[in-house]
Image (cartoon, rainbow, N blue to C red; front, side, top):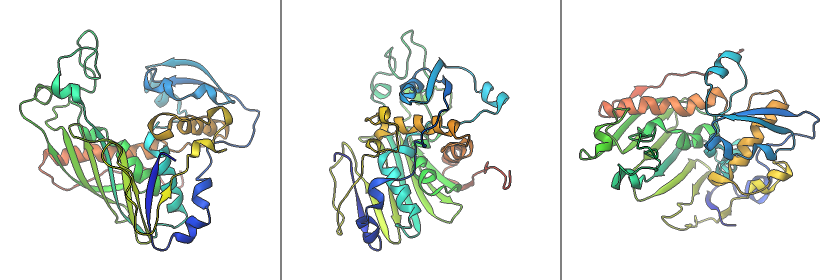
Length: 327
């Protein structure tokens, strides 16, 4: 298969040989049901590309770019459409962790690299990600890297469910850029790199870069029994670990999804899983994966990380917003 990762094996060989990671890694499609979900999609640009209408139990009745206020007023179910959570390698890593294949997963390296070429070379050009056709700046103009940490932290929260409790971060920028001199975020950095501590006492190195010769969302996980490396698209090919090579399944081809949704989709095959999970959570009257509390756990550490970077790397505590126990 095209997408590969490699597992450095010690105690996990038997687990892999049993095939438990090649078939299922959680269920994104429930048993047949007569229920139907009528859905309005908040986010008519990016949000419209998730194939909601292909789920046999879902009818999309409207699409809008408004409304946060609606969620707060009604208490309806919330799910962050975080692509890293359903990246095929992340599904594999999550299942391996649940089965104990990593042993203690003590360190993760998670990163999101998106080289904004036009913002560096032609910042005044209209009709780009950074300027609208009328010349107005979009939200991406000068965006603080660590205000967009979820593509990275999705590989931590989405695998172990751990929460970040402390963070120390550094940033880098160039003083001659009009983008960094004048933006709504007062952000002086192109790139930010952070060391984070989880509530289980584990380490995480988290990078978000806007100016780099690299691209993509990726991670590597280090455990006592196994280490899993994702490939680096556009940088180098696959490098085999000493004990063998693991081919990541294309989970979107399985019965984790309803048949009409079993096709490739954006962001590492994640789009159809995000859509199916949200529809199924409504059908089953449960909270979806990447709920409000997971989304905060992926977002808040980045806000604090940027504060740390502005303070020269000072280690700061991260506020916790999880649901109270028993609630």
